[in-house]
Amino acid sequence: MTVQGASDLVGKSLGDSGLRERDISALTLQRGTSVIPNPNSSHVLEAGDRLLCFGKLEEMRSMIPSRRKRSKRIKRLPDEPIHEVAAPPAD
Image (cartoon, rainbow, N blue to C red; front, side):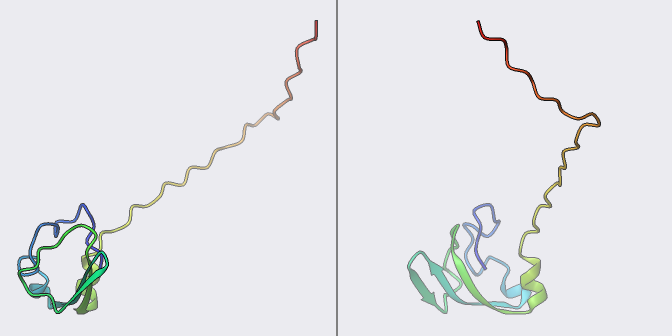
């Protein structure tokens, strides 16, 4: 699970993150190039942190923000054919 910049987890410690209440355990915390195995509850989460978690799949899925649906804009073609514009006469 990646901690996104706009996540409410940013700035919270693992203990205050609510993961334990959801029966989710953080096995590792990856920050940049360093990996912290078995991070304790005092580690404060930052944007971009990656957590390897173990727990109930439904609970972990519920923490992933839903994707915004793309609006499908289809441009309608005109009813009349498009005619080529003639070049202006040369002087």
